[in-house]
Every structure is written in C-alpha cells, then in structure tokens.
Length: 346
Image (cartoon, rainbow, N blue to C red; front, side, top):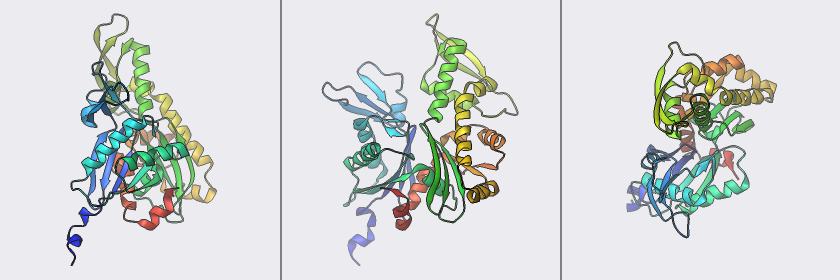
C-alpha cells in the first residue's frame, strides 16, 4: 500500500462553508462542523488600503464592535447575504479556512459554499474569487434553501413538495423543493439583522435610548418573541440617553418587544404566503400534508413557529439545530458528487 493512502488528509481537506451575514460555519469532510464564528473582522486602518493589519476575526472581533479606538475598526464584510467588502471578506475566509484545517494538505481544499437564492453574477464571481484567493482548489456554490432542506432531512430528490423557510442574518429564503430543484423561491432582505434594527429604532423612538447592535441582539435572544409567551419576561436594557447624554438603564418586557419587531416578522410571513400562492397545486397538497420546516438562526426566535402556523393554517416545525442546517446540508453534498452537480449554481 502506498504511504499516502494511510494519510488521505494530507492530500485534500474538503470544506463546506455557510458564509452568513451574522455567522460563518465551516464543515470539514468526514469530521463535521469544526468552526462556528461571527462574520466579523477587526482591522487597523491602512493609509493606502482598507486593511493595514487584521487584528481579530470571529468571536474576538465581535467583542470589539462599538468599542474600538479611532485607528481600529470592527467590520462585517457580509451584508444582506452578499459580500459588501471584498478585501475584508477575503481575509476572513482565509483565516477561517486555515483554522478549520488541522493539517497542512498537499492539495488545496475543494470548497462548497452556500449562498442566497437569486445571487447576481457579480456577487457569484466575488464569492468564488474570495474563496480561491483564500486557498480553494475548486469552488462550488449551492443555494441556501436547498442546503437547509438537505440539512433538515427533507426528501429533496423525491417527487414530493417540501417547503423550507431559512431565516438567516441578512436574508430570509422561502423555497418549495422537489426532484432536486427549487420549484419556486422568494428571497427577501429581511431577517435577523432586521429584527435587531427594529429594536434599535424602537428604543430610540419610545425611550430616547441609544443602544448598539450587540445589545439589540441580546434583547432579541433574551425576551424576543413572535407570539405571546405563557409568562411575560422582563429585561434591563442599558444604553445612552439621547437627551441627557448620560448612561441610562430601562426595563422592557416581552410584549413590547414582540410589537417592536412585528413589521419584519410580517414581512417574513408575507414571503411565505407569496410562495404558497405560486406553488403548483400538486406540490401545495404535499405541503398541506407535510407542513413547513423552519431553519436558520431566526427560527430560534421564541414562538415563531406558532405565528407562522396561525397565519398559514399549516403544520410548522423547527428543524433540529436550525442554526447549523445550512452548513450540515452543504457538508452532506461534499460526499455526493452527483447531487452536487445537480444543485450547484453555474
């Protein structure tokens, strides 16, 4: 037996990446998810380029959001599911790819990346170039709702209709899938970040209190809800008083937070309704029987399944570990070349 057969990891360490607006997850073939970090990069400002030096990536960089001195800036290179800053995104991808691989490989990795439905040719090229410059040998792109459906265990290759609702950080993807293809999809730029922005605006409007992105996200996680909770929750919120300019603490409850995010929530519900209206009758019958599956970080919002069930009159379930559905589905196609060729974006 040749020596290299004993150490296949030296030759190729194929990766699957969920390059999300809020978080980036990396799946290593034959090992599973090896990295789950915020899509944030902290850099020092250069005189001739945007980046002089990368100081931190992921969790450490997120801690710096809103807390950096003038010469350091914490950036989120992904906006609305697309690359907003190519140079920073390239640095972030390179860091995550190197972190995900325990061993140095003789061959550069083959990488499959999940991207939003309806990504433009310019955005497609930007993602591929960023991955290639970060060290990829081959780059394949797959649609996020398809990857989420595979990760949720839906029968995507069978002649039956499956509906997946993937609520990410920057986009919400609602898709009906059958026979290995997306029959109809509705993609809107309303998702987890929209909930955070709605909370920031609510605090400003109702309490004259200025809060940052991290505080808004903490409110959403702690007391956020889409449908009334059995017991009202209360939380202290710290921010800066816009009138006096001094730090201030207020108390909010789960009912008012639900009202604050009602508008983006209804945008998600309307996207689901629109998709259902455009679904062929035979597939619609399958969805009535099997229901709607919800994935993505937004599916973790308390009682969001109850809201969707009330508004659509259809069975609704939350996928197991919804935050990792997309990367797990993307990881599965690494070992299924025929399926990868069928679902990849050209």
